[in-house]
Amino acid sequence: MSKLLLIESIENKIYVIRGQKVMLDSDLAKLYRVKTSNLNKAVKRNLDRFPQDFMFQLTKEEFNNLKFHFGISSWGGTRKLPYAFTEQGVAMLSSVLKSKKAIQVNILIVRTFVKIREFLSTHKELAQKLNELEKKTVKHDIEIKTIFEAIRQLMAIEEKPKKQIGFRP
Image (cartoon, rainbow, N blue to C red; front, side, top):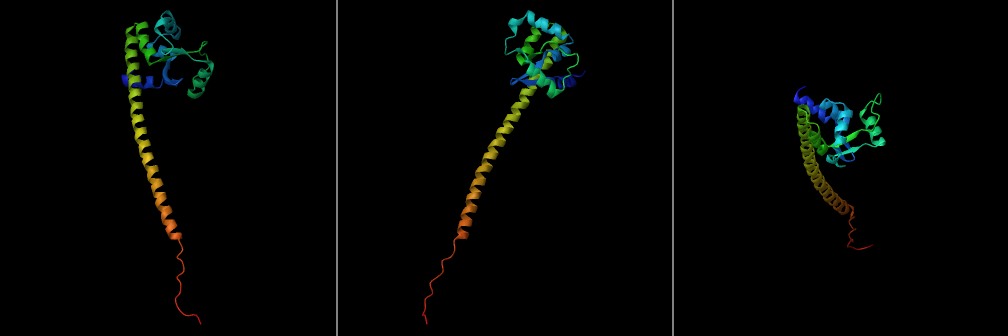
């Protein structure tokens, strides 16, 4: 599999859960070409390397929501709720899984996270510029409405009838 296809495959396996970009243990295991249970055993042997901001277990509700939104099969699936690894957790996996394959995959995963972060940063800049433009437009709209109101008021002023000077019969 080419690196580009692998990076695209990795991008498709990054989810946002609890406001964090994470990858599930089963997806990581497939990338590392190990069983999910073996990946989790290696992690459990080194739990002190995986604080809550590196890895957490999904709640039943989070997992059901994930299955619903992304069409993850429930047939023959996991007996335990999956673990989610943040970018830091994925980086820490390289110290736990020491095969060459694990190191190569970790490098690609970290690069993918960086690519996503750069993309989101660009989007934030564009969103900020769009907001500034919108504010200017709103300000101009208000000014234009004020001008139209003033013109309407000027048009609405009726001319007072002029007094006729002259004689009455």
